[in-house]
Image (cartoon, rainbow, N blue to C red; front, side, top):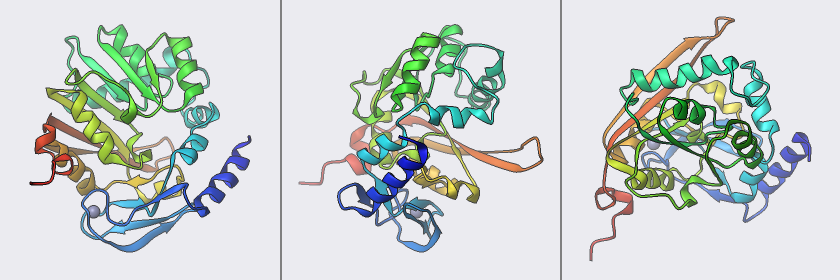
Length: 281
Ligand SMILES: [Zn+2]
């Protein structure tokens, strides 16, 4: 199936019952939307007046997600503009790896002593390869099967294929759970954060990078568009300490682009997490 055929099929599935999940209130704060921020070819994007979060009014179900992340062309398009064309450990990745490890260092998340590290949306797994080389234990999760399989073969890394929320993973085991440019693709983030809390050690940390800026609205596989306040809302619901750090930089042609780092420290145990608490008897 070509990329164009897949887009047509996805657009059709968005119109049929049973393939999408409606979202009424803001997933970050529960507030009501005050306006349509943007219309994509799949779903309108609603804006939350309370926290500034922008989100799809209809979330993709599993059939649509499988179509979106079905082949390695997804990886190729994503990496092409970074000058990376092959999955192979080498100097072409230096800038990419340095940016990610540098961001974690800057935010006090990265330790040089051996860490147990889990990455959600690890793609081909190059960061896992680097972390193992540095003496850390690293596992990745990736829903794009061809990309994950190519990465495991070429880089010798460990990747679980499928949706992070559905894996059997050890509880209270990881020092760091990290996710770069991934959670904006995830429809039900409460499931994701609950699972992150479950697998982190009591003193563990989550590190997240998300893109920011209205130019992201045209990106039809994104379902969450974070504001500083909305990312903080998610973090503070699941962590005792939640903070955000803006990351603004210029591209080679002088365009200002940006992302946002989110750091959650000391996961709240499930009983303390409002959304997973049992109702009072
Ligand atoms: Zn909100």
